[in-house]
Length: 125
Image 1 (spheres, helix red, strand yellow):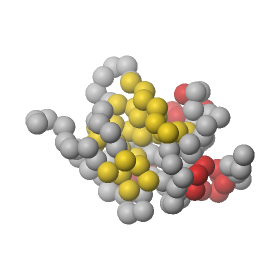
Image 2 (cartoon, rainbow, N blue to C red; image 1 turned 30 degrees about the horizontal axis):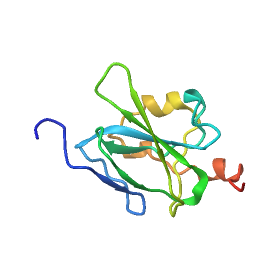
Image 3 (cartoon, rainbow, N blue to C red; image 1 turned 90 degrees about the vertical axis):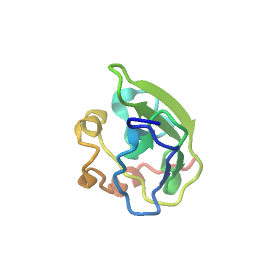
C-alpha cells in the first residue's frame, strides 16, 4: 500500500530476467562454505527480492545452498538466511561482494552468467 511496497514477488530464473520497480532488495546466494563470510561470496545469484517479503526462488545447478536477502532502504543492512532447494537454471556468479553491491540494480547487463567459474569447484559431498 503505497510507496515502493508490492505483493510478494516470485523470482523465476527459468524466465528472462526483467527489472521490476516494486523490488526493493537484493538476493545473494552463497555456497554453504562461504555464506558466513560477507566479503567472500563466490556464488552470487544477483536477483532482486520483494522488499522484506518472502520470495520464492528457483535457481539452477545446486551449487548454492543458502540465500542471503539484503534489504535496502536502511543505513545498516539486514541479512536473512534461507535454505535453497536443488535447482534448474544456471547460477549467476560474481567474484566479489563489493562488485555486486556497487553495480546498479536497474541494469540488465549486471546479470551475467559466469557458470564456469563455479562449476570448476564442484558441489559433490
